[in-house]
Length: 226
Image (cartoon, rainbow, N blue to C red):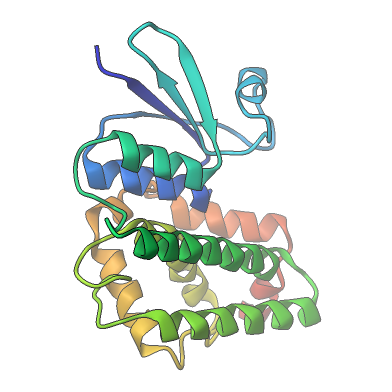
């Protein structure tokens, strides 16, 4: 009997999307269970020491369950144990570079959290500039494309695709000018948006859910868009 994989998730979480994209790229069957992070079930809190998603529950041949937490750990496990397309370079140094850029993607998500949740105009502008500066660094790292490392889709792409997805919603509201001076990043974003694994990592209600999230936080972005 093969391992059973169950991904505990939230519909908006970009970290969940990383794991979903990785699983989809490798063609691995899995069950997805969405929870409400505002009302976390007791069974979930027993599985997740941090109380965060994603959590990947791996059920072995013997029926024993192991819960893995932290998105990059989950993605690395998927890469190491599942067949299908390789999502990391074979070269150790290149692989380490990719892991570093995955972490850099996480720092962008940290800035984005402030950008989308703040109601303070000064904080908003500070976060907007911080995100733009980080993508300027990404621009320097990109090659000819179409993906981060060239022709082959990698885990770095899986990390950045959910970041770009935010802007699909933000762009409908306001011109943030984040990518004005980063043509390589713009081309990368467009290429990732076409990828089936990326498109199917969220449900069709994602834009509405993200907009509702902004409303709940009384986001300054919505005030500028009004």
